[in-house]
Image (cartoon, rainbow, N blue to C red):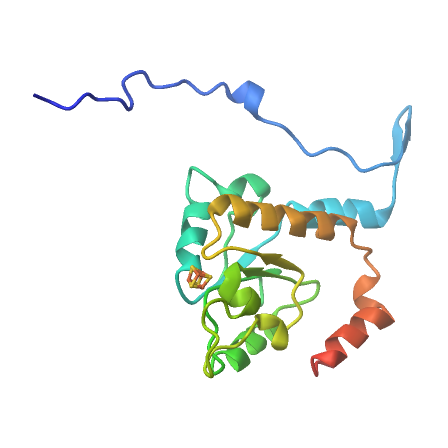
Length: 196
Ligand code: SF4
């Protein structure tokens, strides 16, 4: 007796015209033939919808990221299909996996090689806090060596959780003032990590 076939018998035709949305314009004033808004909002809109991730994956959480990039979860929907492995070109460092203390300086170097503005997500318990590896050899959270913007909980976090963390980063990026990176507070934050 053959097994019943349940998949792909009646392929669903995608109604793309209903499914495609475009980003909303930032707040501002519009009239006949003009629209005014803040430069920060326009820059934030462009930045948040074109983040280029640098996946720093050292163990199991990296596999969840692979699923997040796959066709089902499709991180490309957020404008982030351009994953890069050159710090020079990326602006979102996604740290996924257990970071050994020996790896700490390498992670920090990658962060330092990224140009401003740059953001960091700690994906999963290990990157956020060392996770279950409360041992002499494992860094108890990457925020001991670099500043972190968003933490994604879970061991491992499901792709939905990674997407949620990514959308939180998008919120931050969209609202960030273009002057923040020159602010005294931001410099003080970097200085607290020994970064000039
Ligand atoms: S948080 Fe869990 S799944 Fe992720 S790297 Fe650590 S042990 Fe692996």
